[in-house]
Figure 1 (cartoon, rainbow, N blue to C red):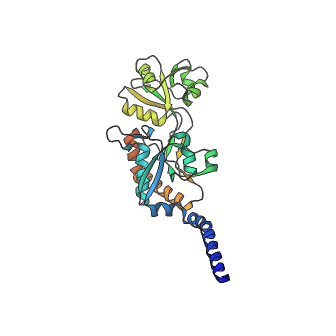
Figure 2 (cartoon, one colour; figure 1 turned 135 degrees about the vertical axis):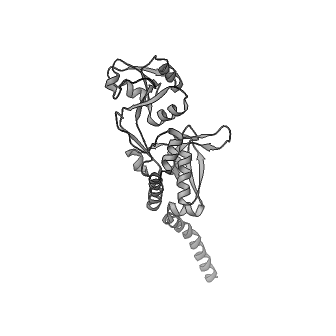
Figure 3 (cartoon, rainbow, N blue to C red; figure 1 turned 60 degrees about the horizontal axis):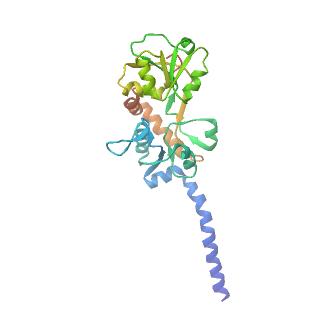
Length: 270
């Protein structure tokens, strides 16, 4: 009886200890090993943010710039991309809880976010940019050049706040881009202001006589966040992006959606 009781005790000890050992072992394997063993990179995105990521009405499939970038990275890791649609308000928490491996959804690299997550090298550099009529040869290079001029912005946007902070600029706020672009084309305002990426997209798709004007603010850099403590994964993601920058494949994706290479920093006045 004593021997059998001892054996039962040892068995119980093994049952208790094994789960405690499993977590460090899984963590030691690292995110890159996990992704490769799974055969898939699980990507969090909104799925409602065109042209970056959205559901195509004809095919019912996810499409967009970030979808193409995620597929490119996954391919270079030797796996496929699997997407998990998540509202923006919950997306960083979802990454932290392990719901997905990465977020590819225009996440700005900030000091606050870097305390919680590691980031890839930037793959997007985007700045505030003016939108002008195609036939307008005005030399608006800075906000100072717009003193006494009417500038259209989206109501409640970051660019509305930026424009209103500029001395002497007459700011007109609109529900969205279609409204201020209409007023721009019809000469009711002198210029409009939006994000560099959205400006490129609007110029490419709006079918209006408009063009991108000068960059009028500092760039914001977007990257791909993932959980901390995965140096092999970080190196692999960065290599995939840097190789894509070097061989032109990233530029091809960017040009497809925006008509420009969004990885390139454009300076104020350009």
